[in-house]
Amino acid sequence: MKASAVLIVSIFVLTVGCIVLASDDSDACTGFYVGADVSESGNVMIGQTADGYPYSPACYVYQEAVSNVSGRTIEGLGGFVYPLPATTYGYSSSDVLIPGHGAACFGSGSINDQGVAFTGSITTFANKSALGADPLVENGLGEDTAARIVAACASSAKEGVDLIASIIDEYGSSENNIYLFADKDEAWYMEVYTGHQYCAMKLLKDKVAVFGNENTIVHLSDVDTVYVTSERLTTLPVEYGFAVFDDGELDLLRTYSIPFNDYCHMRTWIGHRLLAPSTYSDDYDLETVYKHLFVPDHMVSVKDLMDLCRDRFDGTDYCLDEVYQNVRVIGSESTSEAHILVVDPSLPDDMCITRWSCIGPAEYGVFFPVSNLVSDFYEPFAEMDNTYTLENDTAYAVFKMLNIVCTEESYSDASSTASKDLVSEGVKDYWSSLEQYYIDIWPQVVMKAKAIHSDSPDKAKAYLNSYSYGVEKDIYAEVKAVLDGTVLGIGSVVKCNEGREAFTPFVDVAIYGKRYGWSSSIDGNTMTLTREGEKVILSLDDPDTMVKGKLRYGELEQNVEMHIVGDSFRVNIKDISMLEELGSPVVVDYPQKTEDRNDSVFVVCIIIVVVAVAAGAYVFMRR
Image (tube, rainbow, N blue to C red; front, side):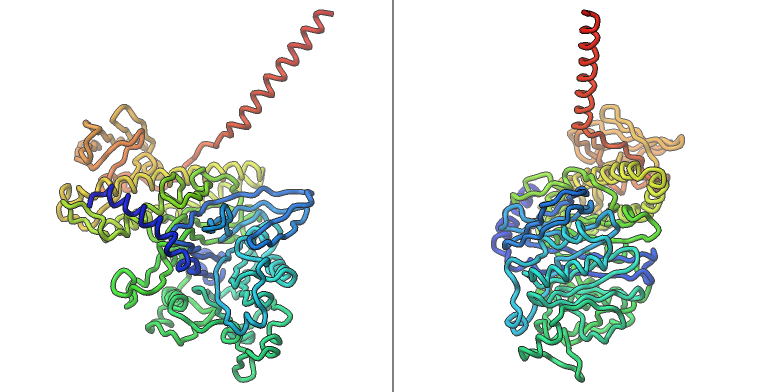
């Protein structure tokens, strides 16, 4: 099957799947927490993979702070309306479209200018007895509004917990959910069981947690910490006869939740196994109650959590890609957006959070850093597609298409032996190297922003806005290059390099090179890259011919796989990796983005002033 035909079929299948499978894939998020004392960076981390339907677009949204404006509300599905205070905080959120509800979205996570991080929309399931005693409230709080309310109104993690608790007390909850909150000082975890019953606990700094769509608190005495609970959490089950006790103590898990199921419980198990293999090396067991909080085998890094977000039970008997087909993995094709929220207490509140964002399925996506001081996003990352097709240029759609290409079993040209495994591993390797670059370079970006912030928070904001906008613009260009090169290059993999062990993607040379200190210039079909007196020249004699370019470096001259799209010179990464080897990682200095509308207004104002002065002078002279 030709590549273009596969893409067309994939789009058709995906679109139909949105309708047919919509009820099967919406409750599959996986949440996690890493305490500051067991974090490699010394910073608390919370996050989740926000799984939606087969096609649930996601984007990033910013809401400005508002001062002294009364009468505003946040409205949700089912008629829920929450009155906002007159003054609210600025925040950005990762929004996921809810199919069948127009433009309605749920906020999978939010970070505000007070240094409060929130992640939610992790659906859980209460049993019939609990819901019969305290039903969900149709017009109560839901995942479509919680992230925005916390971000707009909470100045600390505890304040966020108390806020959600008070709203459930007054309005009720329309869903069973788990919420996570964090700030510089502490982190909290909250389980919402029924319409009005909940339990929140302050998390321990020397522990971690990973959980599928299931509650994990068993007894209130299991962890010596602070709790916030609904007034009737322990008395309601006794009153209605569905309480389950262990040695005289209420078992919250068995009292309120449905029995364990593979769909949720296997993800809880693999999370424990990934972070603490010495303790959880046994095979999966449906009946085992995996600890809510546990000690990891090593200090956990943000890269560890990125890998967790992609896990498909790799290396176990349940690997989805090999033998075990009927499970729900963490690294699902239905992930709309994944994020890791890191809170650094050494930074000012309004820039102390880094959101490591991945739009679309994480398995073939890339995580990149965004500060809570950032208010501007590159347009494809800020645009929400509500057409439910891949025929658009949003970042979500492009990454979703790349995921299809990398997971499509039949994706190979009749003349090629390239397989899905060869293609997918090459793409994963490239994104992993890019993530490592950002992990290595981000501390330098933050320190520069912190220094600027000490003199001018506004200038620090402008710097981080420009940096993040530039990063997103580069990533968007790169995923386009990787996707196009994958589609165009698969048929030539074997013919161009017999015996290659893995397909390697095409990359945008100018973008790739500048991360390692190379500047570039273009003259027709030739690109020249320079760095500290060194020069690399790429040329394509016949721009209509694929994979027949030339590379020259000193006396070295070699053929390269290359093609040109507009002013984008795209070369196979295997042929251009010398730029990384010869250079060293640098912080890219992105130009500050200009606002056309503001510039226009400024020009108009200048013209008005000039005309007014001229008119005044004319009138004065006439006198």
